[in-house]
Amino acid sequence: MGNIFSAYCIYDFYGHTERIDYLFNTFRDDIRSVLERDPAARNGLEVFFLYSGVHAVMWHRIAHWFYCRHMKFIARLISQFSRFLTGVEIHPAAKIGKGLFIDHGMGVVIGETAEIGDNCTIYQGVTLGGTGKECGKRHPTIGDNVMIGSGAKVLGPFYVGSNSKIAAGAVVLSEVPSDSTAVGVPARIVSMGGERVYYDLDQVKIPDPVAQQITALSLKVDELKAELEKLKNENNTGKNAGTAEGEQ
Image 1: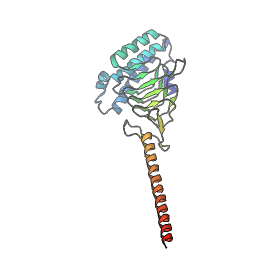
Image 2: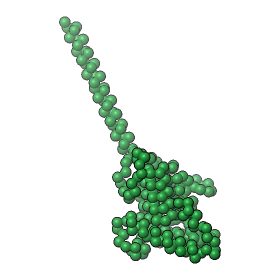
Image 3: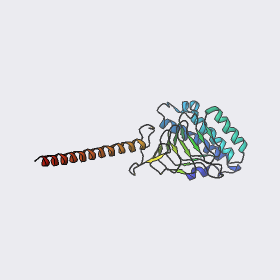
């Protein structure tokens, strides 16, 4: 992932031809990622012309090209133009690896110091945001093969590990280990037994830690009721025995 991020800025003004070639190769990877992950995508031509998420990523790569060459006004102008067209706001300084798929896209916000690895999937309404007004790194770093569900908010300068999933509507405020799943508000890590999370696009069939805790408490209450009923029966048996002895 680091090699991809550094590749954005290694060329000087004499290396623009190579950089443009790299841009077009990355565009091709972006289109291929949609064809692999979206069952509604029929062909590359359709994806290129009709997918707003692809347009947003492509415009960002061009804006980032200008940003790395200190033409920041042009970069921001392209970024705002892309936001107007697609409904996706990506700061031109954000670093994005190859194969990012923004599905539907409307309402997605990616902040200035955010970094996204390879082959990630982001659904509508996702925010990769910062906290506070401090300078420097203030947005999350997303690893490779990460899926972020609809409406999820990832806020702060921490790392979300590769092959992880963030459930729809989750609010993530701290680091997410690799091969794990974050669920809830605030997000909690759901243990997957140390095994790699299968990389699919299911935002629904994800364990709910709150429901699991409620179920555990309910079972405990049932156990306590059973013990209390047992004690009552033993107490009644003892009283009946004492009464019978007294009558004799």
